Image: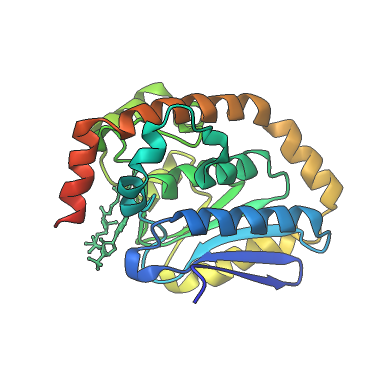
Length: 251
Ligand code: COA
């Protein structure tokens, strides 16, 4: 079974994280699949909108921690170009993606499961959604451009508190901070998403893409993603971070 599924319906391409037994934690293979699907979506003019959603009770538990632990030699090798790693290829794809991106979140969203939402144009969440950013608790630095995007959206003090304390933020609080457009009961998620996608897919694709380009600065954002990535990689190989991963994996 594919850990990422793609389904195109009436101009709306839905990419679904499909690894619910592992809370949809993102593996290298999943980043690669998502990157390929986003590239296909850009080149297929019948795709008007892309929806990122997830199977099961939870949206995404962040990067797969076993992958982090197993890839230690890659991260330790300072000569290895990190732009070639699957995660960076994915981050580049969402940073420069200029068709509308809609995220649908239920249950837990952790780490990159939250920071990828900052790249989406609309976010719809179930009222059970909870967002957490445990990077600092794990000895890591925030990634995916979140050191730029999060303070931009919610202000430095709130962003710093959230990152440093790592508290779990309920969907409604995230909505009030401006990170989520709609919070609805879980059973109403499909219709809340359709309410957006039905309207987006009939708008002029070129006007939508131009608007998105005018509203964002992907070149600057990409420089931040790369700078964070270099520091992330340094922190990843530190003993305290490796100990945090081992503690999680040996629970
Ligand atoms: N990487 C790898 N496996 C993960 C994972 C991750 N990021 N998150 C969850 N899993 C796995 C668990 O190991 C477990 O596997 P098992 O059933 O084979 O033991 C399964 O998914 C279910 O997770 P579990 O922790 O039992 O579910 P929960 O509902 O009690 O808690 C979370 C859910 C998301 C709060 C918890 O799994 C968690 O904290 N995950 C790690 C999040 C994280 O730190 N991500 C990295 C950020 S950089």
